[in-house]
Length: 388
Image 1 (tube, rainbow, N blue to C red):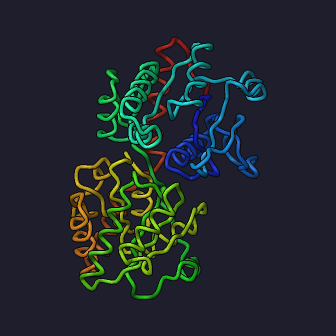
Image 2 (spheres, rainbow, N blue to C red):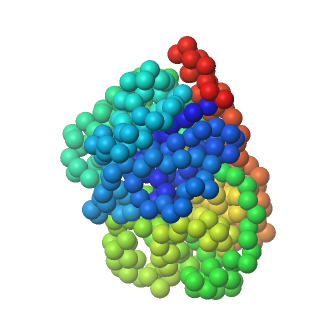
């Protein structure tokens, strides 16, 4: 099958959507399918060894939104020539912006089916950037209209499908969750990671991985660490990632008096190093209400590290409280209480981590086997036979 994946975020940016698209391309390519990823141009390094092709289009850095780039596929003649010479059976778009619209336009010209994946709660992004609720509401109506133009819409969780319906989408939503491939930990990396981030033996490590953006509810983590400190519970908080609010987070930590317990790990691109950080962490603390199906909870589980999430959130769909992780209320006391319960007994924490590793990660090949069935059904509904 010949599959076009269109995305506004891709490697070397390692946010959730970019990594999902990379996993789709890597896995489908490894299964013998022809995959082309259409993404904003960036320095990916050597790509010839990859089991898929990258078709970059012109892009520029987004001020204040590093490491993201905004691209203009409709204005890039070189990209247009690449795509004219690229046969496709189906188009899969992963966002309702430049890349997604280019993918839908190409599919309409060629009479191809389009799958649209809904990954993010765009209202939060619009509200943060535009500052006016009416404009944010108009933005999500645009999002709903985009997905109405797709032949089939996939959401990464039940809750994210409900969010899309709240935006005004009235069609059918298929839940297509994200996967995580099992991999062995390279234990030789552990002393390197511990030394790099100042992690001391016996000191509990609380880890957050993601954008340094208030919309991720990072303030709740800082408040919880403050409460733990006041209760005499010392722990190292490691924030891995980058984003527009790092400076504000540092100032907040200083005002709470917890700055000495805080480590900024920066933007980690290497799987080996990130796996080591997961493995050294006592808990992944991820109280986001913004994320739909974050990869980080699954990746931490693969390294036997359980997560603290908010009860009722999209993230909590895969977490059973005190079985394979911890789910708590969205308060500083709730997050601190869950952390305290988890850290109280090492054996109990280890049992949570083992249960997480056995129940949360699902191999990408299993997920994409179902995706391929849906692709083929859509292609055949158009009266075409998929290339094999």
